[in-house]
Each structure stands twice: as structure tokens, then as C-alpha cells.
Image (cartoon, rainbow, N blue to C red; front, side, top):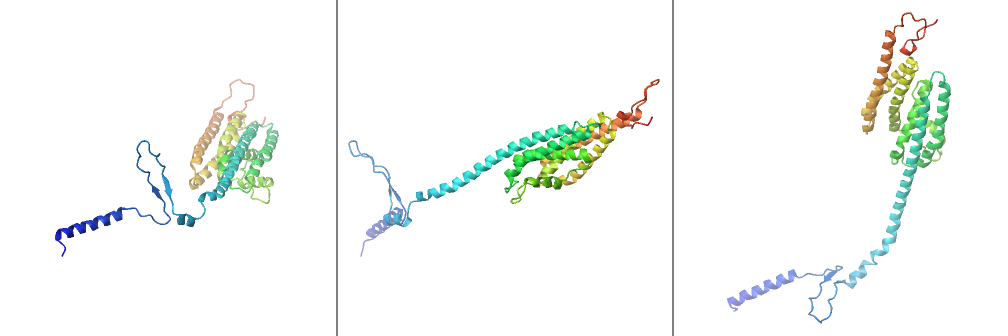
Length: 313
């Protein structure tokens, strides 16, 4: 029979052994363990050995070749992505340059139209149309070549301002010639001749067209003021009615647009243009009715500048 005190010591010894066995790290197959550095040796002994990796030979053979051998394929894949991004950035820069050229030359067409008067209307419009055709062939043709077969919306921000300015110039020429609005279908049809039939052609989207038409109101306001100063009050009234109709129709379209923050700003400017044209036409009409020729004047009064038509002698 074992003494009671000896049983307690034996049980305590078993618990201590089990605790030490659980706390000791166990090496699993395929795992590497860091072998700690030896304790610092006294002076004059061997130098301290660096930390090494202990790897099981069987686990190393099972893992196969090292992963560094797959790097060339990964580098080739990322090289393709880098090449694509570089080509896209270069194309974007070319589109920005073409957009600036379109903007500059379209403004020249608009300035040419503002030189119109009663005596040179046909001559000015003919020259403006020729300049507009040069813009299409020389500069918009560059956009067509760059954007064929690509996602037009991806690079839209690079060329949208040039397209808007072209729409503004084209619609201004059409109004001065026929008094009507140039449609988006007519603009896109005129660009089909520049595209290759084997790929998707460049088509001006609805958003850029509407933004260009919104800018047209400012040019028509300047044209109306110029026509009033030249005595063409009826023509200014026609411009006023045309701009008012465009503004009324756009007020129905803008709330339905997804991204209409830019369009809202243009609508505010368009409303100011409508008010300026209406005030100018109203002022001229009232002054024409209040005009009284000087007493004793032998010269026949000219009522055309004040809104009244010339009468037959």
C-alpha cells in the first residue's frame, strides 16, 4: 500500500509532465521552424551564428519548384497592361489636341457669322460654311480616326468641348441660312463619310448635342443685338422666338437627364440670354411708338431703327 504523501507527489509529477508536453511546440509536416540563436558566448569564444531556417527535406520535395520561376509570366502579363495604359494615355493626349483645334476653328466660324448684315448675308454665310467644312475634314476627321472601334464614352471628356463648339457653330450657320435648328441626325449623317465602313463610326452623343445647342443661345443673343443696331428688328424678333422655343423644350428634357449638373448651369445662362433679347426687342418697339419727328424738319424720318417699317414715298 502506497503512503498518502507519496500519492500526492506522484499525481503532481504527472500533471507537470503533461503541462510541459502541451506547451512544447510541435513541428507539423511541411512547416518550417525558426531555430533561435544560441545564447551569447563569452569573450574569446566562437562568433554568434545567424538565424537559419529548418526545413524538412520531404516537405521541400513535395512543394515542387520555387515560386520565383513563375515570375516571368507575371511580368509579361503586367507588361501588357502597362502597354495598354500607355497607348490609352497617348491617344487621350492626341484627342485633347484635336479638340483644341476644333474649338479654335469653330469659334472662327462663329465670328465670321457675326459679320453678317443685310448687304453681305449670302457672302458671309458661304464663307462660314466653307470654313465649317474645313473643320470637319481637317480636325473632326482626326477624332474619327482615333475613336473608330473604341469605347467613345471612355475618352469622352477628352474631346467633348470641341464637339460642343462644333455643334454650336453648325447650328448657328443653319439658323442664319434657313431659320431652323440643325438636328443631331443630320450632324451624324455628315460624319459618316469620314469613317471606315468596316468599324463602328464616330457618332456625336445626345448629351454633347444638347450642351452645344444650349451654348447656341448666347451667340443668338449677340446676333439679335447686332441685328437691332443694324435696323433689322423683325429678324431680332424671329431670333427671340426661336431661342424662347429652345429654352421651353429644354426645360422638359433637363429633369430627365441622369447627369444634368452642367446642363443646369447652361440653362441659367440661356434664361439670361432670352431675357436680354426680349428686353432689347421690347425697348426698341416702345421707342419706335413714342418717336415724334422734329417740327420743321424737311427730311423724311427713318423709323426702321426704332422698330417701324419704312413707308412708301
